[in-house]
Length: 239
Image (cartoon, rainbow, N blue to C red; front, side, top):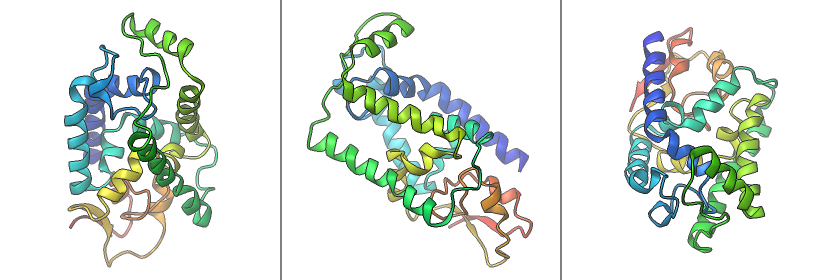
């Protein structure tokens, strides 16, 4: 269990190093309505996404086919922030059952909205593309010259991440369109954690899980943390 956790922490740190700046630019400086997907046409020259966006997306989708939503728990910078916030969430264990399932549909609606804006509206620019300037100065200029819709989009993302202090992983569970896409792409991944026939339905995995779910169920990110906490040893990794 400790070894597995350290491996996950190392992959999170490596991902933060590789795509952390890209993630930052997507939220705070990307002029497009849907960030991270129009990078080849982006005038923000400093953004590393101009060079790495396609390999990153190919790697993310490949990981979904192999390991489901493992990117969310092992490499996503936003997921790492949400995980830290979940440690002090005020309503841990309070949103469950039907309420949890209904709210979970929000990320699929967000995915549909992103597809519509990207495909049918041609992903319009909602902020003035600041080309030059220092890291902090350029961010402030983006906020000074952005359109109202850009503020709404950015506010929703930041607000949903902040709500993780109230409801664990609020963004990841209920609003993240990337998580929804990975769930659909990796609905039957090659490898995932699952409950074997030794499961006694004690509910420990659900209570210990940061996303308050069970292996291979909705919102499971294949993190594997529950495997070392199952008293029956019933959680396995495999086909």
